[in-house]
Amino acid sequence: MSPAASLSGEAELTDPWVALEPGADPSERAHMLRRAHEAFTAAGTVPKPVRAVVADSWRRSARAGVGPDGTASVEIADGDLGAYRAEHPLARVMPLFRELMGSFAADGEHLLAVCDEHGRLLWVEGHASTRRQAGRMNFVPGARWSETAVGTNAPGTAVAVDRPVQVFAAEHFIRRVQPWTCAAAPVHDPRTGRVLGAVDITGGDGLAHPHSLGFVQAVARAAESHLALLAPAGPAADTPELSALGRDEAQLLTGGRKVRLSRRHSEILVLLARHPEGLTGDELLCALYEDESVTPVTLRAELARLRRILGPGLLASRPYRLTVPVESDVAVVERRLAAGAVSAAATAYAGPLLPASQAPAVARVRRRLADGLRTALIARRDPDLLADWVHAPWGEDDLDVWRALAAVRPTATVRSRLAALESELAAPPGRVPR
Image (cartoon, rainbow, N blue to C red; front, side, top):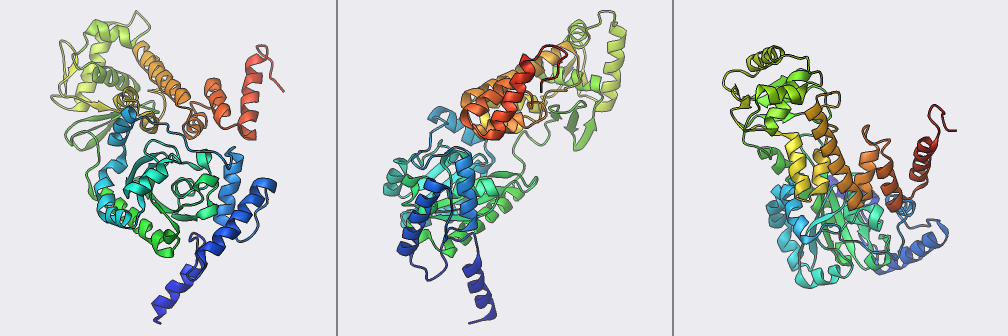
């Protein structure tokens, strides 16, 4: 045996992310795991031979309130699913996934599955009979397979721990999933490093081999390389892009240069981007200033300075308007909400629109956008999305969202924070609750 082969064999024997070392008896290991799973569900103890990664996942699953006899729920219906998938970054590498894994899945009676960053299945493809069997446990597009929903499973756990992972037989937390074996690897945005989702191969005991884990890991890396080569998804290269969410001073990307705008110029550009037909001077005055004593001369001076900053040809007058369409992050969130793609809308929402702005029209858009998104999150009842909102600076005191989170993820931490907020709300003015 060559040194390289020897090192590879040693790695396979000690890799904690692989379910079975070479030579292990799958039937014997599955029997031992079933007994260990029963011990955990009965007494909360994790005996050997449960791997540390699985034991940690079981504990997280139990803390999230997952029951061993539960099942996955379908959260994105067919109508919404198409719009959500079309907007998701992993749609751009689905042809690659099919090319690299499609035949392997179909010929081996396996399934190729791709989930988003919240563990929701976007695509499930492969052998027809295997798909029908998987459908009985709701392993179908639109179903949520995060750890917090169905406990330990390869795609949900891979997203949770941001590592490639293999899950074999009774390592799955939910009993009806225990006849299956799966291996999954997270896929990252090559520019930001953010987890976009995971690619998974699901089937029978034959997948309980180090090669299946290495395979999905290689496919995930290939997808990341492919995404790095692709032009960024979004507007055409010559379309100016305005970023105004979560920042007091907007940024405009135009002509290959980034322009940081003053607060007043940020407000003007946000409003003009929303009104491609243009606004008169009087309309802009009412939209921007609460103080009726501000004169049209003041506004014209601001617009003249903005025109010099933007460069020639972008800002016209009579009425004031932008001469080319400007894509904004506000419009992206609004479009995704309108399409029912709530997760994608939440991902694009970087915070309130120009939070320090007191311009009346900007404040109205800011409230409408935030209220629309939080209402959609509460209706969707996704604990991961709700948790993201309440742990963001703008949502940490949002009582309604905390209540929604407590209803679907009643952990001690969530209940404690909700009780504190409700106590603050009930306390008399000026009195600090204990």
